[in-house]
Length: 257
Ligand code: SIN
Ligand code: NI
Image (cartoon, rainbow, N blue to C red; front, top):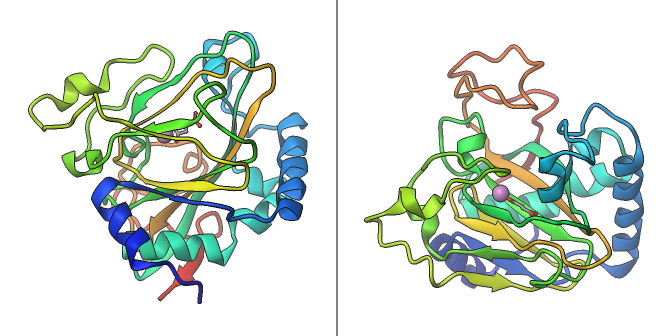
């Protein structure tokens, strides 16, 4: 099985995020760019409702469960190697897919992705879920790279932030010792990735360039995670009741101890 160094695991547990360089080879990366591009271009119900004229589109042009539309994307989303990294980082015995999404930050009047935690949006009772954020383009502050606040995953679940008209996440973190002034900016080459914990404070810069910033993110959850009852785009068509195990064909186990 794929090895993840103890240093990476320790870094993730301490800081709530960790970077892995060159996780996809240049050939595979080109395949993935093409496949995600096709999914984005197709008119499908998996867009999260935003129109190019809408405010959300300036933050993110997003397509959920791209793996359902493309075998080439599914190869990445379901890949045991990335899921195994997620499993090792989280310490879980098993890892399930929650969903994937293509996250493009479009050029032209681009807005940053405001500081937020992911977990408040997810319908899970237990913590532990995490994301891989694989960049298909080189990223820096000019086109939408991410920033993280180290250790912020330790403060617990705060309010869900409206990504279009954001509240200030740090207002909810008063007294926790979280230091807003010391975010870590993660610039990366295409084909590299970060993993971040569902409670880690993160932000992505606006895209001031003339090309989309293309990212594929996959959200993993520990096997055993239960449904909170709060509806989410990927659970609305399911019969889960509060407290049920999140499982089934939309949420396959991807890695096991
Ligand atoms: C982004 O890609 O702009 C944000 C990603 C995230 O919030 O996880
Ligand atoms: Ni996020």
